[in-house]
Image (cartoon, rainbow, N blue to C red; front, top):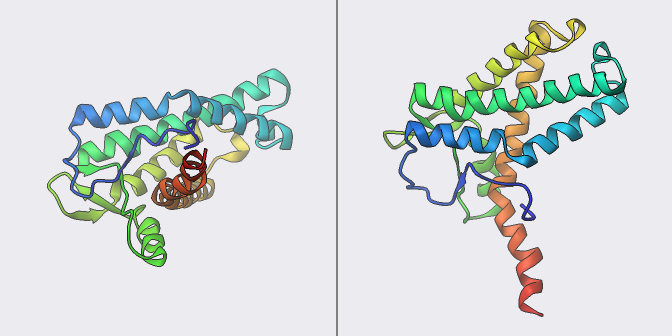
Length: 192
């Protein structure tokens, strides 16, 4: 996106062959440790520092470092569970399969649904257990490093629901970004 934000886990081929275990690990590692991912974690930490989110971390460089570590740990954990561990265990493809055609309404519904519908490695579709279980695993693990006031079952459920919500919004982005990009940037290139 904008030649900055990578979209490693998106394919426009509905019939793409399933990823092998090593390819799923590569997808996880590439997206989890991409410089943009690290930069987003830093931005989230800065915003959290400015608003004193998770006050148990404190302020100053130490508080920022704890917020940055927690944000990066969330990103890496989420990628591990949703792009590698559960897809390998459950034989699901972690990629977003872009529809790319049809009415806007149909594509919106499709994009929203992809958080809950996965391509299986055997072909066909199944409930996307990898995304849902990954969100809950990440939310649960975060109890190990968030301040004590920001832990517990209720907060785990909240973080998991937020993660699924972001994933759903991300599906819409993955579905429509190539169209937006084409209209905004390639139109101008042709007129030069």
